[in-house]
Amino acid sequence: MRTYQNQDLVVYWEPENCIGAGYCVRNLPSVFRKNNHPWIDINGAPPEEIIKLIDTCPSGALLYSLPEGSRVDPDLAKGPGSRHSRSEAPRAEVRLLANGPIQIKGSCELYDESGTLLKTGDALFLCRCGKTQKAPFCDGSHRY
Image (cartoon, rainbow, N blue to C red):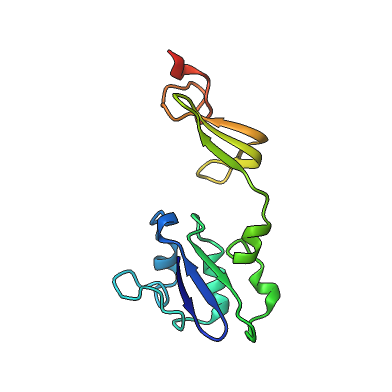
């Protein structure tokens, strides 16, 4: 994990979790500078804008927290990108079953690419062989 900090905000980046969706670079290029080193300029925008952007990170590779003495309203820093809210969130367990589907255990919601809720549950089984007739869910076709 890499850390970038100023007096009002700490930004954490976990490169191994980054999926390269580019939300950060496209929507706040003054902070997230693709071809620069370091690529995050924590002083490139007000901390409130950075927080708002990190709350949209689809992979969770970007997180934030407020250092002691920060001038940022603490209520603003309670979104999905908050390092502290992450540890309080319900946990789901994801397993790749041998010669089978992806199993998700724990309270979860599955949405499609348009944001439509497909299913909620405490256990979901997603196809990973591509043979299912009820995508994205497993129907046991991998056995045949």
